[in-house]
Length: 455
Ligand code: FAD
Ligand code: MLT
Ligand code: ZN
Image 1 (cartoon, protein in one colour):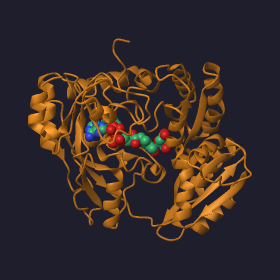
Image 2 (spheres, rainbow, N blue to C red; image 1 turned 60 degrees about the horizontal axis):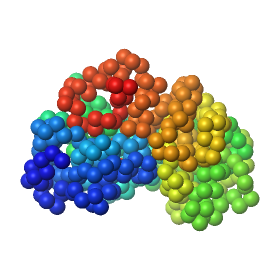
Image 3 (tube, protein in one colour; image 1 turned 135 degrees about the vertical axis):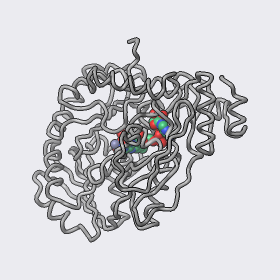
Image 4 (cartoon, rainbow, N blue to C red; image 1 turned 90 degrees about the vertical axis):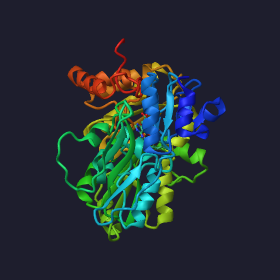
């Protein structure tokens, strides 16, 4: 593969992996659905090394897949066509927090949990949180514009992004990491690279906005008889609870699976059906009274469990956060992360199982997500990895409901053929023009995001 000796000169022999056993973890995605063939993994330790690797690959027209924590869920981080993997995890420094400005500069390979920790040590907080926090990286979350559990309160990753350093497809480095709050000077590269899924440039550093900490937290797990009631309650909580920090959603089948997989006690032992909301309030003073009043005002609540201390809160969160891992235990899922208008959430949840069943009667459907944002994670197990008939039918239903085929995970390779359901021909033409401008030789993640032009 290309000039391995040259890559070894740049990053040293310990950081060029070619042995199949050594590269296995970089070639397979987190779900186990996507696996790439034998290839080389290169692990630069500095931005200059990353730039030299890209320059070398550009000279030999060698395609490259940038990779962070490899927790992506759309097959965008693995070398499905034998591309070279550029792993950024050795770039993991976090500079001292700018405590006065409430910002921090972090390397692309730093884990989100490490950024959260650094922010907390300086009396600040980072607004993005997701269950993959220990592995997902700054660069990967920017490249996918990750959402997560706090979008409702602080916005997505794009909303945190102040500046960026990146390596362009020719090996040039662009740096804009100003310690500024305002900087209105033309095209905003951080916004453009955010959500570009490794197709326009390799992110090597970012300047991130921090948020004030909200150290007092209370959570409640609510059971409703119907998804309609749960969806209505999510809307009411957004209006009625100023300290609202998260409203997460799951169903009885997912809860049962989590309890079985991780040997957890059921929160409401007698309940055999229902739609659940995990609600968290966070503030600079104890939010429990406001949370209790807001919950009391809701219609259709069948059961409530409240957590005021961190131990019980963590126990409630486990029912939600362990969905992803539990579903993976059933088998490699098709992960259809979609968004619909909040008013259509209950209809989507009601219709999806029938759509799946009509195509794949033995497949299982699991539904959970970020209720207040209209973001539903539709997971289907029991399908062949390459059989995308269910994906197609579900995405068409979502489009009919005025929704989006990706709420937060991105397009990757898994959804690229359906991009026209979410974007107009003129938008896709503009995307292609950007891709050509940034990466004329098409070496950066060439099989990701944009639909294949030959299809
Ligand atoms: P990777 O998986 O390594 O890469 C993802 C994409 O970014 C690929 O296209 C890759 O080429 C590109 N990329 C990576 N690094 C760079 C870089 N430095 N420069 C340019 N391109 C790069 N996602 C959510 O949005 N919300 C959630 O709540 C959420 N929860 C999750 C929970 C679990 C348990 C798991 C396993 C995943 C979850 N995810 C979630 C998905 C995943 O964690 C996010 O997509 C995350 O942003 C990926 O980060 P990563 O560092 O692992 O990137
Ligand atoms: C989540 O919200 O838990 C994630 O996006 C992961 C998933 O969809 O499985
Ligand atoms: Zn999610």
